[in-house]
Image (cartoon, rainbow, N blue to C red; front, side, top):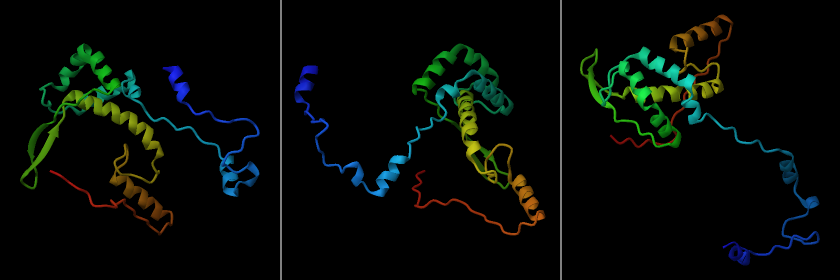
Length: 194
């Protein structure tokens, strides 16, 4: 097969005197010369699934799931039963997570009464899926949160609308009088299917 590939390959004339279609180094535009000066940066790898299944991350995720308590999902497993389940099944679950074959279970659908009347639909994941979600969230949040603006308060740990108001009051007290409020909006209509 190697001989066949070699037979079909085109022979290139790479001798020092050979001329191609590209301009010589002296004939390049200033933009091309400037572009050569810039060095490429290697892509920065983000968090990996290995980070998610790391022992300390999982211990913290399990502790958080236990603190949150919550009802059982479609499999009926309670938060109290999760540790024993992990002792028996963790090697297989870990392997599925690392090779990309893990499939979350469907959520259990319930309706809870609203204070204003009516019912609010709620989906309850299994406690195992909540553990995995928590472990993923911890890794992603640690990586992404440091890139957010110090003045960003939405959906971030240790921040809230109350803290945003406190910050605004501090700016006013310091003599700042201009406020810029911005919010990203979708640039195209969304297709929502029930």
